[in-house]
Length: 246
Image 1 (cartoon, rainbow, N blue to C red):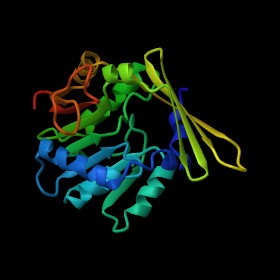
Image 2 (cartoon, helix red, strand yellow; image 1 turned 90 degrees about the vertical axis):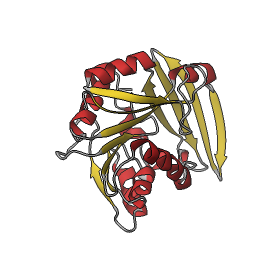
Image 3 (cartoon, rainbow, N blue to C red; image 1 turned 180 degrees about the vertical axis):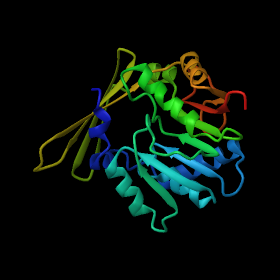
């Protein structure tokens, strides 16, 4: 499963996750703006921007936004939706982002972290965030799942229908990863199967990785309502922080 992300973020991803709407992204961005307190026109990098929901919402609030993603399919969709060309879209790997400038904020959202088998590869992402942050005032947000909540609330199997298309999702925790198998079926077409996985890092482990990457979390929230993080009850683990020593 080492390269699962190269296959899974294609056209069927747009179908499986189409319930993620722009309105929800706007509400999340409003909260992020409260946390970051950026100046108008600040430079923001959306790392693993996907189809660009949050990137475009940030741009609508007046920020200069760059969106980076590995999936050409999702970037094509983002460019199509960005009818005014407000966002700069870049194809790239989050472990080695093809950008040299620094940003006032870097955001990594919707659990776009923990994709890689080796811890050192996941930590490379954090080192890239450090490199891309402005040394003077750069801030980051990493919106990650809460492993404690996932372990106790995991839904092993679900099925839903979207017109003639059936989407089945099986979930399990194996070897420290939460793994999902997605099967997409529709009449007259071969069945399509995709895999997703995310490494489960508890709070202490994540804080240690941030520290090694030269980053510090000023706040850890349990959701976008700014509730305090709780190991068992919070649905998310959202880190808001900056470079160490800043």
